[in-house]
Length: 154
Image 1 (cartoon, rainbow, N blue to C red):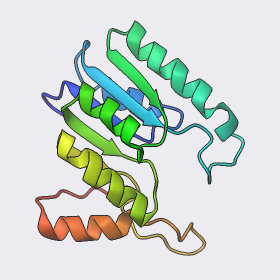
Image 2 (cartoon, rainbow, N blue to C red):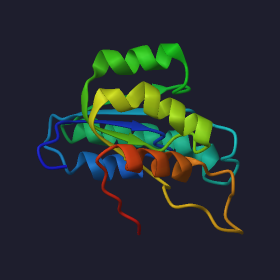
Image 3 (cartoon, rainbow, N blue to C red):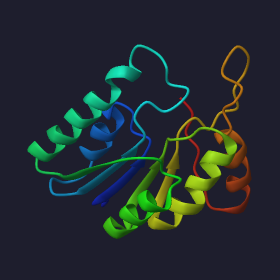
């Protein structure tokens, strides 16, 4: 993240990773979050409060001197994409939204070109009893064969 001054995160949920990534950049950096509150599949105890935490974390970043913005909506809609493009380009795009193959592919097509560096979350192939609907690993496997890539698994 050295030298980065702008960050876009697709799928911030509570915003804790967004805050951690932002704090690796200098104050004044542009930080944009796109998130869909109450997205299907996040029906656990955290989900009901996720947007409250995310909004609070955006305010925290603003108070710390970051140019932080939250776009609430579906990353796959034209309206959201146009708002994100108007605030770009970005040094870093972190894609962590829709984890289906089709969803992450669409986010890659729409938002990948806006970033100098693109990062993905959940790139490891799931194993039972994990959620087998996770499709990020399939796209990652395809991309790392075609493009320069670094992989970090933890």
